[in-house]
Length: 358
Image 1 (cartoon, rainbow, N blue to C red):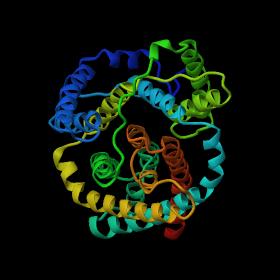
Image 2: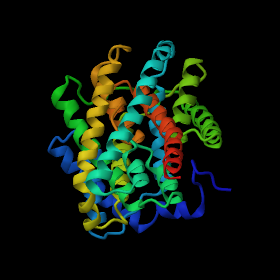
Image 3: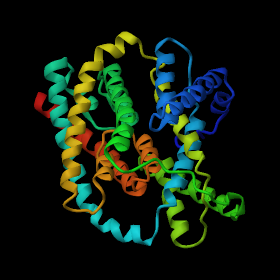
């Protein structure tokens, strides 16, 4: 039986050695090197993302294997798990306030952005609600299909927003803050107890399967970072992955965003671009307001809070937080909470819409 979190089957294994994936790597590596040469922030994600997006829209057959994505999400989880300690656990009691702020941010965002899309771009009501949600594209596409909404409009709105967030936020971090991308530290990786890595992987797989079974969003990432955190706090096992592995994660995540345009046409994307830009602007402004309000309740720096409330994908935002050392645990926690709230609130809103029509 195939598990949705760890897609280990023959077809997915074949994708790893397919010429379509080889084409993705062939395009991604040079584009990352070029972006890095021009000192573009997060070059190893932005370069492949833009290059693969263009290739996909030009009709090239590009594919991102599910196993490749699964692998890098586990790597991300292990990286984030290294930040978890007892001090962090003690701070989590204060996060209830930012969780409440997140709840109201999502409700207000969906209301304002969906009304804009209905009024100015003629989106149908349910389609506008799915398009306005700040994240959770995968689950929302399933719900949107069930509700017979326009899947093309929903997907394109989210993808354009994701590209804008990934492209713009690193420049903001670099140019408007003192934070710099993490330098590669000198660390004797070979001198570690490598059996600890096996323990971490086994613990991670157990929690991934459990989280997937009880429907916790982003089970691959959340299961790994929780397992890593528990094993590290209890001094059972800890392991530091090479910092260079972050570049690999950036490349795969960037390319995977580009691959999502494989079934889109330039005309289709262009049609939704302007309204998606405005919708993204509204979501970012509302996120900034939420981040500012959060400063009255927690001591995190404003940039970490802005990243926590930005309407980007959880995995892409998590890797940005790691790359710039912006409290990845705090950021990841709030994006997982955001997914849970969206998945809870959207069906409630849809029921209210249906009742209004009766």
